[in-house]
Image (cartoon, rainbow, N blue to C red; front, side):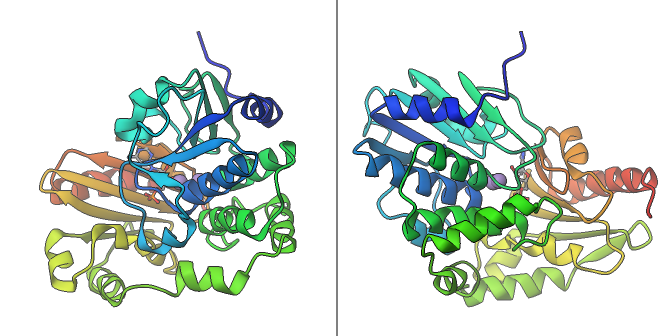
Length: 329
Ligand code: AMP
Ligand code: MN
Ligand code: MN
């Protein structure tokens, strides 16, 4: 039995309107879209007098801390018997990490997601990869709910939009994306402040790690592939943490002629997390899926229970193969 994956946001709005105790679930290792969307929705739900919390299990990255105004909690007992559990930006149950069981306890569970690879896991699923970000789906949801159009709500949504579109650079950016972003500025959003928080408040250690890692990048497949590894020893050298590798895969893709870039993160000696990016015709969701991961056509990831060296060989081979099958305009 295949589950319905295209429920309407209108239906989700009416379910949320009826509930009073709500847990929101961003994906593990949250990004700007997962947390920004969750924070905006949490704020709107609370403005209606509901009890709403964002239930998390790993830390909020530094560059997103400004979004968490007492919305995030690790305490799953804050709401004993949640009427509604809503997952945001999660393409499958695994992206909920250890919280899968709590999510399933919701009397009604909902999923809002925009990934190209999606496996329905909630009672009510709304997946639509024509949206560049989950934040845009939540924007439409908030309009359906007649939520408050305030600068504070706009902050979370705008964060999701700009981080998932690479500041409107990526091909997922649509005319609707720009219209929604424009509307959010009309809500009174402090654009300058937001940009400083997200992009211009880096720790020097992070910038050093960027340089240290990129220095060792390798090109392959006649310059169409680019790969870089971040090892535990690089973290020790620079004082950075693994979460501060955000943006390195994009930097590699910026190289002229590179179609697919890969960042390998040595999470543990035998656990490597992989970030893949494609520029024009490549499909990294396809590559990631072959390793049990997933994501979008142009930004995807997977996790290998292998050393960083073994992972590197496997990924390079898979990408080489993929690139061979591409036709470039
Ligand atoms: P990242 O490279 O971590 O920014 O992830 C890029 C995209 O790939 C995101 O949309 C993630 O949802 C997806 N993704 C990353 N890692 C995994 C994984 N291990 N399994 C499934 N999807 C992933
Ligand atoms: Mn995400
Ligand atoms: Mn997203």
